[in-house]
Image (cartoon, rainbow, N blue to C red; front, side, top):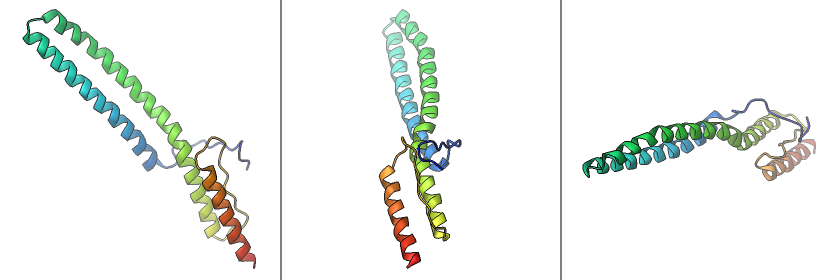
Length: 139
């Protein structure tokens, strides 16, 4: 197994973490959508109350474009969120499985992370710890 060429095919390795991170981003976007809707509604009601009906109708024409814009942004957040959280969840998953292998008694285990993954320093520290464990098992 090589470090640079190893690619995981499964993008969701820790669904709880990854979906939570994406949900937080989506909630921020939905919050922005709600604020935008409130502002547009307030402007619409204000324009109607002041008798400027043509401006009120123009505000209503903007709402579908805003909704489509937010929908596109939400889809992008989901797609980008899966890939960016995978860069965090993937190495953590890999480190956990390799630690489990060491705890099961396997020797010569090494943690490998991909070039753009998070936590390369942690992987190296875990490798050093595994080496110490392997050395102590031999002596």
